[in-house]
Image (tube, helix red, strand yellow):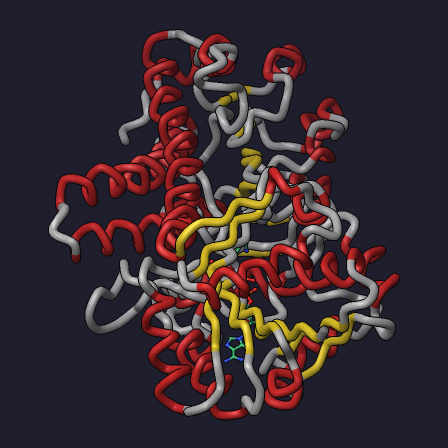
Length: 480
Ligand code: NAI
């Protein structure tokens, strides 16, 4: 059997590497139109940082795992074609700012139809709107007669930062297909691939629309938990409650559960916002405005949390950060990834730059080039290759510097903002840090990683999200 995956990104790369690792008799080729990305997959320096990924790739690459730009050849030869291309939010036209842009998906489907000479199972790996399979089926069957295409929906539930562990030991694998004999046969073929390492009870088979919708629903529920606890964090600050204690108290209720209850500066990543917006749009198109508004609120609370954080910084630093150096520790949207797509750091940095702060940014996995690009791009443009060039520069060289050492970022700063929960930020020598800073020295902990009381003993003024406020901060209330 030969598998081809279109799209060598955060999903296509790790997913296929694990399939190749677990199924040595299957040949797996990952293809992409982006030559630099394929070159990186074939090099020592993989294009994405993910714990454990290097080992898996190095064990299979050149044996039964290949990366190539020869998209058409490998699609033509494959029995199963996974499509794992980006499905960003539309930036223009009907549904702009909400609907999923299926341009990349559609062009992949047309190419599959054009080059295929044998029957194929086409698997939706990308997250797509409900009923996409129907549209894709039309494209595939319309363009080429006599070849059977069976569409399956097999959404991916891996989380960046733990992708390899998630793929090795998934909570579940979801496969949706047509309820026809051919559809069921296709489901069985894909199920047999996963059965190499996933037990039968963890492979869920559904109809196509349930599988497509389940992915959007799962992301909406996950993001909703973060917005729920973040909404509580604002109330904690106002009342003197401690959000960690509240989270623990509610999370021990087995009906609620302990995971995903950490208050923070907000969620980020390429999926949560885009998938909820997509869900909102689907609800609106189906005449369900109340349902749409319910989910829209999850995003509004997330935006509120980022704005609240910036306002707290500015108000506690005497209502102005103009010309003040602020160290930004962490830029990726979470730890153990270099991914900055929709990271809250972008909005926080832009907010501070709007108030004329000078930023010194350090993240162990994010390059200066990436940060500069992120701070220059318009919302939603990041996932559209045509717009990769900065279109609306909001920064200038004097306002932002990117450094490769936390202590260097902090030296002479008035304040520190922790925006990613990298473990190394817990272990900094905060006495040394304090001595190197301007006074009063502030720490704004957007991930609740530092021991605030210890830092206060050293002399810092500390803001931790959702925790009782220092008297300094109480006297300078943030306006959200
Ligand atoms: P990505 O942007 O990292 O990768 C997509 C790749 O597809 C790019 O390298 C692009 O060059 C390539 N591509 C686009 N059009 C192509 C074409 N016509 N032919 C060949 N290659 C093409 O995106 P990522 O993060 O891997 O996401 C892919 C899909 O998976 C999205 O729908 C996303 O919502 C979904 N997803 C993402 C997760 C994540 O954690 N990143 C988790 C679960 C699902």
